[in-house]
Length: 156
Image (cartoon, rainbow, N blue to C red; front, side):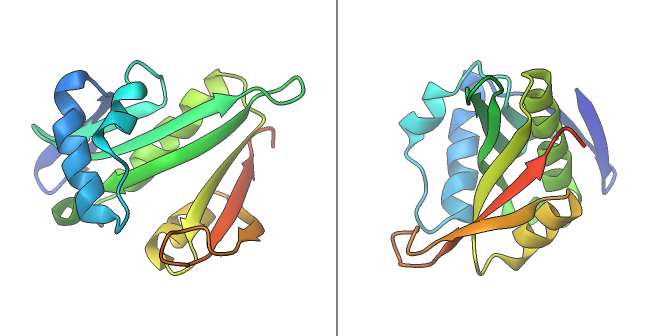
């Protein structure tokens, strides 16, 4: 568990539980124009990379996993978001760091993620964590926006 101080409140990072799903889903809907369905989050309960930031209420989450790839797993940050009122306090960075640690523990050699080309705050966070642009997926999102595929090597 990681604790982060944010404005007189302490934020714990822990594995997501069933009781967190409604709050996670609300943050998802507030954060993305094409939110994942509630059931998508249910499927990932119990996964070591499904983490929430909790300050007495869930204020953010990350969902990451690993997939076997020719001998060494590859990590994938599938979804990460922080409640609008809690942004800018380092919660996203804490969640991303914990997710990377979880994937490293699962022996992932690298981590990838997709991000909207226009999402400058997220791009800045990922660059600070050493992610680099690998390729672009044209029209990846339903509204036609491209996704940048970013990758970080975990061996270095």
